[in-house]
Amino acid sequence: MSGIVRTQVVVIGSGQAGLSAAFFLRRAGLDFVVLDHSPGPGGAWQFRWPTLTYGKAHRVHDLPGMPLAAAEADGARPAAEVVAEYFGAYERTFELPVRRPVNVAEVREGAGTETGRLQVVTDAGTWSARALVNATGTWDRPFWPRYPGQETFRGRQLHTAQYRGPQDFAGQRVVVVGGGASGTQHLLELAGTAAETAWVTRRPPVWREGPFTEDWGRAVVARVDERVRAGLPPKSVVGETGLALTDEVRAAQAAGVLVRRPVFERITPDGVAWADGTVFRADAILWATGFRAAVDHLAPLRLREPGGGIRMEGTRAARDPRIHLVGYGPSASTIGANRAGRTAVRELTRLLADTPEPEPGPDSGPGPVPAEPGAVSAAV
Image (cartoon, rainbow, N blue to C red; front, top):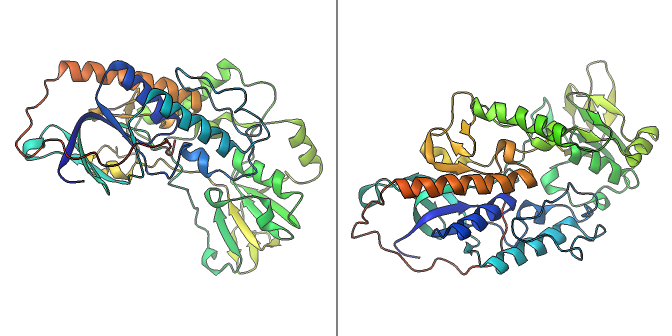
């Protein structure tokens, strides 16, 4: 691609939040493009381990305008397959202009003939936009804690993002670190394959009985929203929700599979050790320690606050009304992503209507189409 491609809005990422935003942008009649770095449809779901079936996964909320067909929602199928097919069909149905694979390097202020616009710099060229919807989620930024002696461990260390199923740990002793949903799912799977497991968390897990109610959901979202409004890094909505105390979980607790240990003091060449002298020999350490928001490409815009996060007002970055983050903070859930997409587009429609379009300079005409539109996906 040569030159700069001009459009009104660029959406980065095409998972649940990105597709929702794209749907409402299409309905609003705005000119936009969706840039996605993933190899195929499905957002972050396409990278989930094959043994995570749709029935075991957190519910995928219907995208706006097109419900998930009952045939695709077979609970025994891998969630990665179900969601990939659904997201791909969604993009085709609404003819969303997704370009892939496109890796965004940075978003910066335009200069010269592009002053007042945003430049989205990628490995497939540069797009110039009046506004940006960032829907990059967290999958690309797995969080790896650091402990003394970690570099000496002779076994295998991997993160949830690299986990492909229990078969890789047959007959091994495995330490699972992390008190969230992924950690418990890994332990339940490993129980029938690994020789022995140890579950380690920084804080005692929070178990929840009964259905997930609307009031409960509002309270969780409010806590996450409070942080992003203060400019702090967001916590996970799923993490704040707590862990469901199901019959399967109760059975695993009774069998000693889900017996939590406090975090160890150090990692040794052969395992982990606690301050009281207790040790656990291990062949592998599985870090189910979550993810962080993938927003480093926005660094040139200087949106971060001293607290380390991007201060938000709804879906809008407080420092720049042209920038909306969906699937970030309180909207980092499937139903929250849909609502955030609608809100962002409503505000951007008003912004673009109220702000005159700068006259393009002689060097900023549209360039060739950068890539063929394909099925959608991204990290959300």
